[in-house]
Image (tube, rainbow over all chains, first blue to last red; front, side, top):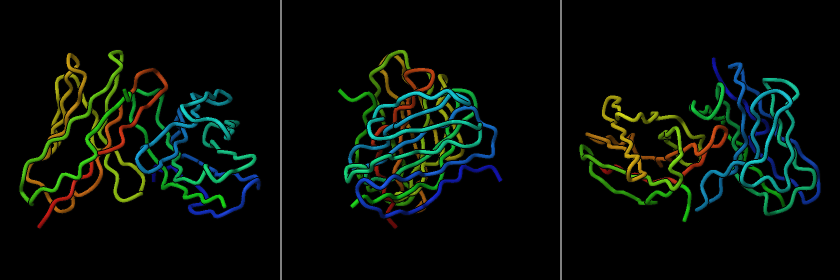
Amino acid sequence: EAQVTQNPRYLITVTGKKLTVTCSQNMNHEYMSWYRQDPGLGLRQIYYSMNVEVTDKGDVPEGYKVSRKEKRNFPLILESPSPNQTSLYFCASSSTNSNQPQHFGDGTRLSIL
Amino acid sequence: RKEVEQDPGPFNVPEGATVAFNCTYSNSASQSFFWYRQDCRKEPKLLMSVYSSGNEDGRFTAQLNRASQYISLLIRDSKLSDSATYLCVVTPGTYKYIFGTGTRLKVLA
């Protein structure tokens, strides 16, 4: 089954404790992306990757890091999480570039206390 | 001005009604357009792509008006299961997707 898998689905943690949200896709997609969704603000792009070892900032990259060492994986790293990063996070992938629709993971609900 | 704007709603319509949403975008160079459906904080799911000539998928019709810079979604014969938030997506560049904040639809029995 074609899918984008995120882990964990839910996480409650404390300020400053480094965390990683994993994302994996099995569709051999080149393009992967991370979004956060907040009430009234919609989905905002954090980082995206056009292919292995190629990443770029989206609209809200501050406080986040990503890596793309393998085509299927695109982890999101919060080195020192803060309460304003409490949000619902989605990973997405698509073939080639943004002319193609994206497939989304189930989401990760992150709470930073 | 936001890059992509949608009326947040909610649109409350009776079953069987026809309802239409618009989505305006500011970047005239935008290349691709999509409608997604999102149920209560679940992942967005692709409803349909929007093509220049307009396209239809069952009860759903999508249209693009480049001159006025908006896309539209028409839902005919609304079902209770159509209740959701509808997100429009615009791609102003090769690797960027801009999401609208969504329009809530409630179909009432």
